[in-house]
Picture 1 (cartoon, rainbow, N blue to C red):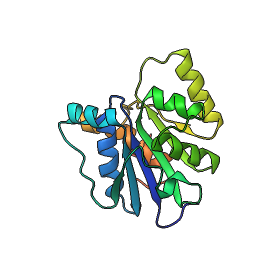
Picture 2: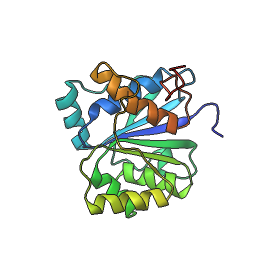
Picture 3: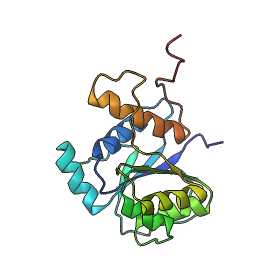
Amino acid sequence: MYPQNRKIIVAVTGASGSIYALKLLDRLKGLKNPPSEIAVIFTDNARGIREYETGKKFVAKVPAKIYNNDDFFVPFASGSSDFDTMIICPASMGILGRIANGTSDDLITRAADVMLKERRRLILVPRETPYNLIHIRNMETITLAGAVVCPATPSFYSKPQTIDDLVMTVVDRIISLAGFEVDTYRWMENDR
């Protein structure tokens, strides 16, 4: 279903939950068959929130490459590119709303629009809680358009012992949804 040398996009927006993006990027690079290229895009707010929440600045390591959110002259701003998956993690409700309503006013929303129009994989990981009716309707619209909404809701059946363990329950689910093989806890498979 997917090419051998996959190219994916990871967008990080200004929602709380920077640890999810940090762990996602680390995990992707460490997979048995990692993507050959990871295009990384940050909103301005995401950079500040990431530093505040994690105490770290992002440093791109191969296969990751950072792109500016205002640069439309990149391969994945067009449907002719061979990027097959986009993950927005965490996804702010503002970004989710703009995508749901077809407003492509920056690279993240344009790349998401490309994923939808080309029928490629788009995964949005909202961290907001609770949801209001506008959020729910926007998530419905995005889902009907072909995207996957995967809220950053940790699971507990693997009996996580640390915050990192808990975060990884979400990250491994995202990676699995993106079509990568990941060695992770599976309900009742590891208990037999």
